[in-house]
Length: 438
Image (cartoon, rainbow, N blue to C red; front, side, top):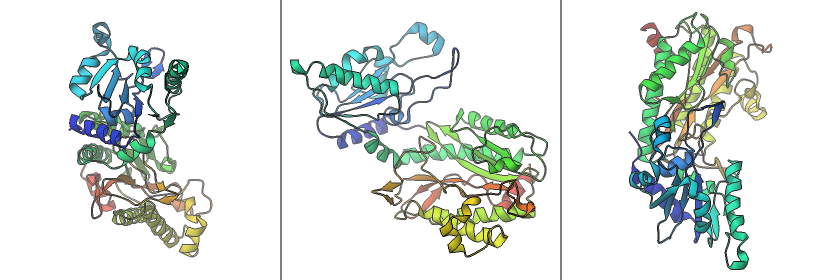
């Protein structure tokens, strides 16, 4: 299941149709990054570059030149090199890029400094996302300055550099049907991984045992890498929002919070489930869990086209604050507590974020200072939580160290939303039944 060559071409065409007259866009690929000495981190393509090309090799540059008679789409990439391919694997090379990816022309990356200045000379605007790669920023400015140095001979340097993100990231925010299908696959794989972790959770095992089960499930379904560092926090570790050590022994009577999702064909899933290590919630754990679940279900029901981005979050805040008052963790008028932000002692993050090629995907949350309305094709997470720190002396001891978060991935539809990650249980009774049957 992949994005088609024709869809990548349509993305490039749409972007070029919105670029200013007589302009050029320059988008770099990612580079390999050294991990230690002579080893590299697993390569991960730049999301903007991948969105427009589908190309999964490092050291590439895409140049879009709307209206250019000799070809509007030009790629620079590593040349074929049989000796290096023997060590590092197959390269498409310029010919493969033209044939397989539908570029109008392609050249070796070693020729980029000789060719690009001629492509941008005489163009009024360069679209380029500056500030993400200092070395490439300097390279682009070097091309511009090389043209400026020849002004007396009639050369015309670009007069403006515009942020490509303003156009491109709005395109990425609305997912196509093909993207939703790929994201559904990522969600299904991740759901199976979470269900497996529930089945394999027993007191005495370590957090990394569940992390390894999750990673194995990802890989055996064709998603070799997680979309982000997996969080497996048991006991008080569940109250640390970005806990990733994953090295503690799990104890009976504790909850374990797992926040993990795979990356499949470039697209991320992002799921959180919280469940009892030994398979049964305590009374206090279940009470907090049910408040979080109630808030999440209410937020999902409130996720509809036309509703403002912040509306699902506000729904979770109201339900959670009401629940904290009912449990005695807060006291006072609910509306006043919300206005004063009292709930943030227990619920300190927002209810979600955009999801796509990046886990925290691109796209503005506000337009002209106002929360933007939701539209069909937007994909977001809904992830409320309650965290009672183990050292919180302002609450009864029975609540301390309980951390619960429940997160699903949803796509906005014409009439409401569809939950992509419904394949893993989140009702407390269903979780206990799944774990009991393991």
